Picture 1 (cartoon, rainbow, N blue to C red):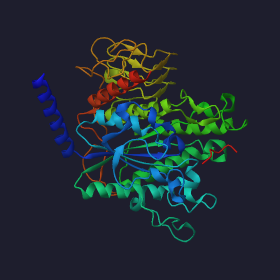
Picture 2: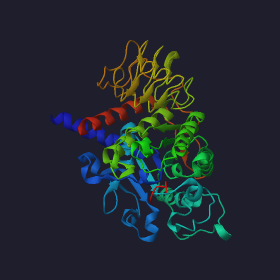
Picture 3: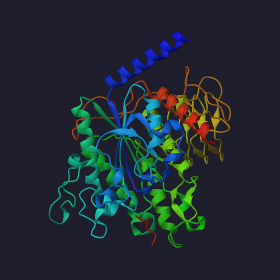
Picture 4: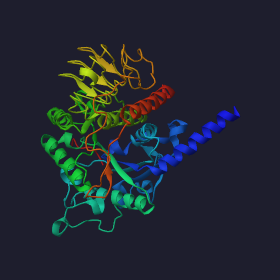
Length: 468
């Protein structure tokens, strides 16, 4: 026992030293109130109450006017934990936990800036002037990027809060002042509910494309991985949602745009939220606590899919095509007509994960040689019936029967041809001097580690505009 403890301690010291030598992986989380989150912090599992090994910087612009989130604004890096007097949380808690498991040699850092009741047209676009109706929701692009923002703000576009400490530029400066190399690893975006109740819905795809392009340009990161949370069907009036009857086409337009943007860009993915329970019967805008934990898990699975195997043959996107470990040896993940939300660790030789017409939600660790996860017309949720909760083992049959959790990869484990995302980890970026996401040699293993951690967490728990 003593020898075992010494070995564990030595491993911990080794991992700590390794993490210090590797670049900090920094994730940016942004959007409106379902990114802010209404999770009840007191109900989190003990290991998620506070995660001091993950650095967290948080701001909600509600604090500009001394609102309820004033106490949630960070002055410096702190542990990843629920914030503010109400100790609320969003998807960052489980997402951060999964990233720490996936990348044990890297320190994980999260910058989150989100504000309820905001939209891309009035609040999040680059170079916008102040919103005259709701000043504290103004110019959120600049509030997020700060000095990294390339827009000019003068005249009627002058900054409303010119002295406000901005998030990403200040967070990076603090890390770099302490000697850390930093890699901007990805953007998570949960937003669109606001547009779903009015005419902006029908231009949402173009405004979202413009927002992503602006972020990438200003960070000097043309291949920045982006994961979108598709807005929930809880919003439909037929489901008891808050958006008025007759506006269903608006909701449809936003949801379709989010999927389309992801499917046309191999570095963008989307995740499903349709099975999330609403916070309360009288608040179907927002999710309940368990849903925010699942949302973080799905963001993690989709992110690992993007960076782990984005360069595989046939991997046109993480949805409807490929995900973590997808498409080995002629297999296909999410064939024509499918809707794949975080189908990580998908097909091996000759296999198919989410064949035509299927709906795959978190179908991690799917089929190996000759196998199939989610045959035509089936619905796969959390890999039941074929896939396990970790990366699939190839070379002879499916990895993990329904409900099992297989250990990560052997020869032929769920991996594609290239094994690494294009754009790689090397080099500097003109926008901030940081590196963008790339995982040399870590794709399938990283996905397996994170998905095993997620499976463990799951077992332990068994007018039309959104109000601001």
